[in-house]
Length: 470
Image: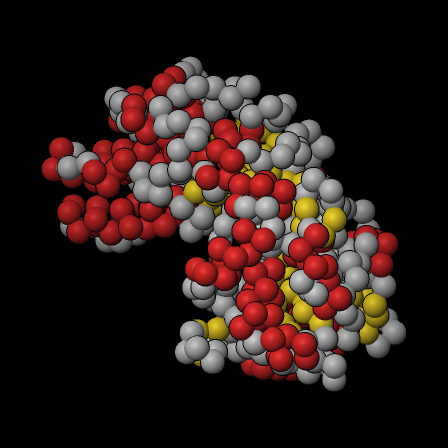
């Protein structure tokens, strides 16, 4: 029996930890998912069980090596960001894997920004809004001032993607995609670590940044090429960067709808930062301007109200088809439309203020809900489109399969080509593709991403009322 050549990818999410196998054509041939219960840190706050995670990676990989069906050619890793694993001089885990949702001490936060130029200057330089523990560099800063004796005993601080790589490879490295995701660590204007990182003694705890040439230099058993891991949002962009050369933006939809523009290297303004914009670093180290909208969460909350009011199942919205007659009669919320660029991003759409009794049917109400979300989406996406030559929008994630959302988005951007992208496991696939040359002798397949085009015949609804992007 001939073994199938594959690459294994560990995709570590907050909820599920996955092991996926892709063949040489990047078709998914196996998926294993594991849910690990959280534990509590010393402050009784929920956090990742790093020991259970380590055991899952080691045990599942050892089992995979024994499986006679597959020839493991390579392995790579992707994981959520803003999380560090701390190792002591004996390379043992020293502290909990703190939760990035853990509240940050206000006084310590104030001291930090006062010491390093003030909030406005610092956030612009680091392209990182003030997010507390979600700025992962702030976690190290907190340990230094709250647990100075423990801080001294930290030999290495590894972002989570690099730690899961370390578990199998023993390789100690830093990765630019993890450093460049709202960490407060990177100076985007000087393209280097921010000065505070060295001043506060953090720099010598961060392993050297691995470059592209040695991303897969580490081998397991002398035959399996291993990557150093990537931040999941940056990894999810890789299939698009490798498949399309013309400028585009990607709207990645889920709980958050994040618009990523890898063709916009303009520095963030204070107005953009206040509206939840930030910058990532791509796997090539180039800036990726991004804007965030809490639209998936908003959708989730409002469909509960629709379900209760109209007596429908919670997932009834999945049966609703786009109706141009209903959409054409919708008048956009002018207050939301005229929201000034220097105002904070609205966290909920206008729909929450609408009286459901005014709608004749669930379908009519649902079209209004999506229209209100699209008003926000247009504003959010335009923040990163401004000044670029992007003519294509790709949408992946939950809303990409929603015909009401996709049609209304196409109408909102009448001068753009709007596509729904079908790309399951985008982060894992990106992690596999980035080390293609180190394990796969086949050419990159041209059909990795399945696209569906949505046209905007004429200017209707939101697209006619809102300012067009240039």
